Image (cartoon, rainbow, N blue to C red; front, side, top):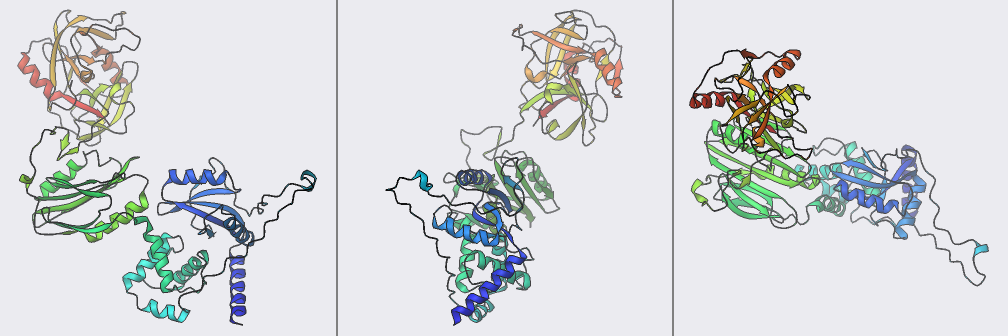
Length: 588
């Protein structure tokens, strides 16, 4: 009698659910990365009909079949389970958590209920030999509802013993599973009860709206499965004076390299943890904030925030995501950095939350003398970590007192970011692709010590000239001066817009100013162009004529200083003037 009543109640419940949500999907899998989901959705699409893929939120990508009417979806779910074509834990999904579609590619997915696919039929009788028996597969029985381990009354009693934190953990797990959208407050109202009921239906449990002890364990086990193998452990690093939970299953201690205690990958997962510890004040905190952003493990894209006594940096690209949290307290700078492979967002978010909640500074500070110098030291490393390097560096020079810079167009092509002397971000204000130069305007005003004055008088052939530039990129902090002579007022083919020089320039010098004997600028050094197969002597260089540059600048509404004075300046004085005007232009 009880079974009959229960069956009737469940029939009424499913009927009401079908009225509220008649169009549903069969969810067969969820993957934590888009590439993994794309591989699996292709495999299913090769053997099943109406396969689609949607982003579910929280870093998960769902593979579904449908949509179907509720009754059709239930029948299809049972049949495909019985045939072994979908996992046994596949379930009915209502689609309210579906976000961006990633499959089918370039085709809008169906939104109306589809007809139920016809099972693979036996050959027609006319095509079947008389002595061949046609086997009809039996219709599988519906999966029985799992018998609960507690009655609803017992479940409520065990639920009442939960702490607020434990109740909130269940809401978080329901939210992660896609059933709960409300606040994480530990209060079990209508929204939480409804999400529990939906979870029970999806996982083949009696839909009571109250999770039993066993069901709570099942939900939390699924929620924590993403952390399998991470072996989260509370680590106390006494040398660094930091206590924190880290994933010891994938990282291990490597070395102390102040201000870092480095934990390196211990397997295939390229994860790292850095503990940060040093003495300091606000100036040192702010300096650390700037230095960390030059590291290769801190991608340029991402949120940054600096406060009076703390800072946070998030960096993300197509390879890694790094999260840095640092604070200053009682003259001690303490923090940590988590570096994690891109695409594994759900696991990374869970681990970073554990680290943030457990981080606790202790008394000690990392001793700078704890690390010993070794043969692997290099100027492009900071405490053993590689400094981010630009993809291209060229030279440039100031043309006004606002810090406007003239450089070669070669320095700005295909750049996500352009900097002047590494520290100042800049944007392109004007470019002349015919002449091959560009004008950069700093995003924040710069007050240069010296500004170029373009020579308008005709220079004398065979007079001495010099180009200022950065032939070795940012290795040297000041520009180098290379001396040569003015060989011709025209190019090799008679081009009047360029001058030919006898001067051994390096690629990094391109964009630098070409000075006459008196320190006036005759033009800008051009990159060597040997794309047509010609190989010119190493001492043949070319510069854009100052008059051509001035005409282009005037057309763009950009003013520049000029002079017609021909003078002589000792090399030592010219070197100082060049250092005041010449800048390093970096393309990132």
